[in-house]
Image (cartoon, rainbow over all chains, first blue to last red; front, side, top):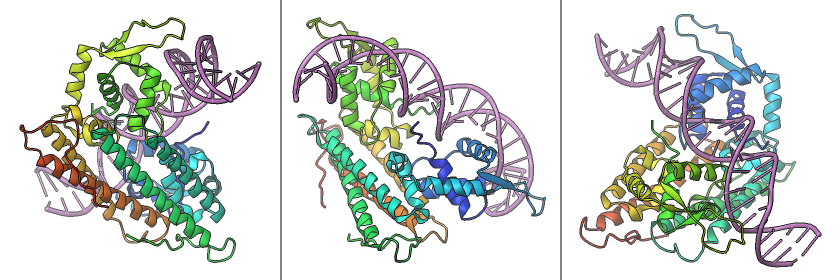
Length: 193
Length: 193
DNA sequence: GTTAGCATGTAAGGAGTTACATGATTTT
DNA sequence: AAAATCATGTAACTCCTTACATGCTAAC
């Protein structure tokens, strides 16, 4: 088990929840949302859409517009898809805070309960703390050279991300649980550069 | 073509160049060197070692020690492997500055010529600039909510990495090409927090 | 004596990339 | 008229992960 690649499904469901889209457009939004690494290829998106369609999570909307242009296949979420989306954003296991999945999960925190949001953020934090301590436990030599410079820089990146997480967690905890606007926005995060 | 997964081969070759090692130990070093993400599994390392052994890049060293403990298969680089390593660290194509490969390449900059080092660093830089401008070109809405907070943070990460690269490039350019110690260490990088 | 860490492997499978294939529409 | 971008797809392949299987050795 321990599936990790469901993150594409989650992202598609999340984007389609905001309104129907066709594959090509979906890919652009996906790349904008999570594409700070390699771009998602058509070779993974289209088969994934077909598969989700077969499973009944999404459905093709019959085209109504002028039949002049090339038919674009527009998808919308089904009721089953909505349920599945709710199910996915309620998960708070390791699959939520790994590198591959955390970003998608965070992006759709607007559809996630406060309690789950906190669990995911804290899970991510301990994941990064673990990584940091692994990196600190470096043997004797290798304290110089390019490898060391790389290590230093990567450790600082992790530390920076940890500070970010801590601020987010503090902000979320400031939300009175169950009271207050359960808004779509993160509670005020103070940025002190 | 455009192979990307050769980075494991490069890393193994690079580590073995510093001295013979067995698989288990190799994995630990590999994880220390590049393991700031998921740990490398035995399922990828051992087959890779076997494959490299078959190709003649590395060779098993017959054990001499006390035959009491479980036989560990210690590998060393062959002459062919050394050639291949030199070949790999002399490459300055896109495969050098992608996310997956850049770290390995950087870690072994000690075995890379100044000219190539600069080309790789500059390639990496334009790769990140490209990503940054892609992220900046965000459509109208999505200017609030968690997705926006994520985007902001990720953009700052890229900017931070760009500053790092710029400093490295400046430092390398400070090296008088062809003169001076072609050392194993990066030329002084000034860190101003 | 039993857990934890050392040590090496294999089989099955997933997820996505690359490269290919096709064609319409819009912009230059 | 050409080039760019819109638009959808498939087949082959690569790399790696997961899960399983085995057995030794040191520490508690």
